[in-house]
Length: 490
Image 1: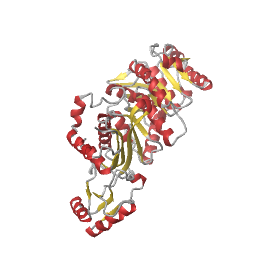
Image 2: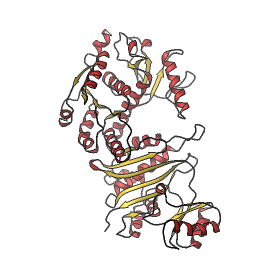
Image 3: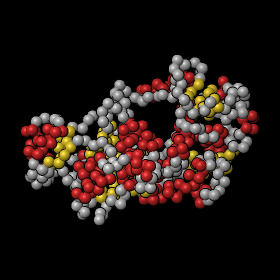
Image 4: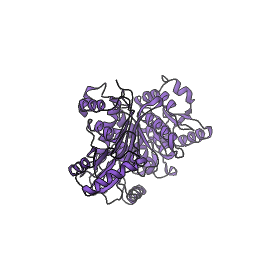
């Protein structure tokens, strides 16, 4: 450890940790790794953005940041990230629900978008500190594990791969000697296999030593990471920051201010305005059908449907849509499908459609003969609920709720590609044998919807994509149910 301590003598970490006992424990852990640390006042850190940023800042708030705090400290996070000494935050809390969970997700997403590295696992957090302080930010999150057969590192890699497969996930970061390695940003190499002549980089890949346990730290001039799972998590967290900085910190440029962005998405703004013109100026909501026209004007795929004002018209729409069809009530004040909107499904004949016309209006409490929506049967797939609303000091935020995910996922709008991809990656196939969901199509829908809202923020106050159906790539991922909240219109 002597040479390691000499090499790490200049490495320092500022500890902005609420709990004094936790701060002392972290300081001892870092000291054992050869890293000096100093406690700093959290308030002094945030209130003095011009302070020297040569030290990595380890941040562990006792309570989760709220939107107001996130907006206040975001400029400091952007400055430290740009200087290569980011704020590395441990944000591990009991799961929440309702508004509190939504605000927490929004605040953490805003900070992540502003350059803060957020970890929810203490081991990953510690290794992120060691990685960033000892080796600098990696060029990206891609990892290769280099280990001789039979070693502890090879066994750990296989165990992680098997665990991922049992959970129905893919684990592409580990390759055997019979396969070609994809380009990677960091190669994790057993510390015992390194020699003083081993280069720090091989091509664009950074070589980082790793040991199984802290007891195996040896007399080395390089700072090793400890534990494969935590080390890979650290590379992913720190590497995502590098990728984010390449795209640009903060939300994506708005199409209001960036003509190149507007040209990229090629919205039909005339169609959008025509649909707005058809709505009563006093309406505060755009119902499912009208909201889908707004979405389609921005190139977002929606389910094929039409409004029918009579049973005969409903049968004609059903024939054009193609049986079997579904029928639901029309109107700006109807419940979303997540809230229990009455729907007649699996309609195969004109007689079925006529009966459904009467049934849904009665179930919705509408007068007989009220218009209905007739639509094609939505495809099978994984369902995602997304909403785009303003959240306090943070501005526009996208919240996504995915089947199987314990809490909502959030990101500032307009979405950066990295944030849209991060949300889409959470969507998994129902079974390991099922085809992969079209995550790219989901990301595209979320990006376009976020630009739509921000571009038209003078008339749209909120957008709800109640049912996004994510299909395999052989089918079309689309929006099956939507609503919008409208502001005053002239």
